[in-house]
Image 1: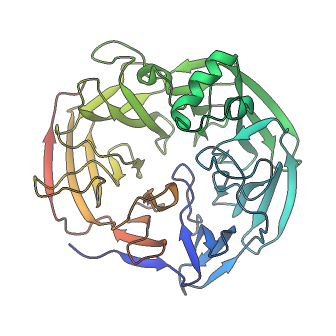
Image 2 (image 1 turned 90 degrees about the horizontal axis):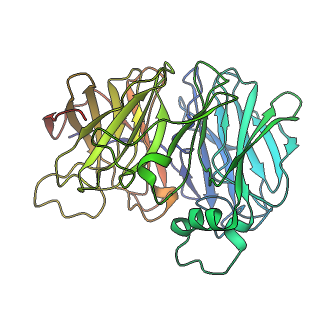
Length: 397
């Protein structure tokens, strides 16, 4: 198995890809964008020239980390929003939050204030539409995080608090030209942390309810500007007591992929078309239960994951050390599973999760790892000879 190629690394800056719902690669394939954090703990945005490997800062943050989803220990309404960055790869603009400001910076480092979201709100992962016209910033009523000091349960207890206190989340849509908030869609009794515009229709927004008790049916949602619809419903082997997670659009906007675990403990990867019909869910081997992410490739048959695979009884790691490519036949319920390389990541924090993404033409997979002692960005060949090449055939549920 070939070792992955280190694409971007620094002795002074720990680098990581943007969250996997946003690409980190420019459309022309020349530039990679990343979040970097110096030893002072100050995160910023950086650009990496993929030809020369040169790294250049795009922002100059001096206020630490903004409190938001995942980064609960950040400062309220101050600092860089590590969970807030969205990249428009065509127009080469990065959108991010600094305090309550919504900001935009281009790849030359021209950084400006675009708008502002209201105080009294805690934010999650943002997303910019494919046409570059709209930015969605999800927020949740602050009391979900501040009503008491019990942080032992952290994210697992927040949804219950939202229900008990009658709190809401909001899908806030901003015009990327004017910075004006054009839409503020209140979603009652919801803790929304992920939003994604359809890659083909900016009127459609995929969003989640984070860590609900009935995660099997209340995780994955679609809003078309007027109607909110749950995409995974109960029945035909699906239970409200299943766990589902990490929903993501396919590139043609026809369907959404996600993954999770059935009540009986089996992990699965799933796909649901937005036009209607039953989801298709393919169960994985019984001992392939380690956490990870599934990210789409150039079409519905191509996925990459940093989790789940277990290389026999000798593989005792608590998280998966492998990066794997999946070629899926959703109709037949089969997966050709090929391990591409070891990521070597410690998974010691959200920042070191590999969060793999395909490049725009599906030839390479980029991921984050601290395999050499400091977070950096690596690249693997999607067609590389695999350590394991396994054919999985399971009844599609």
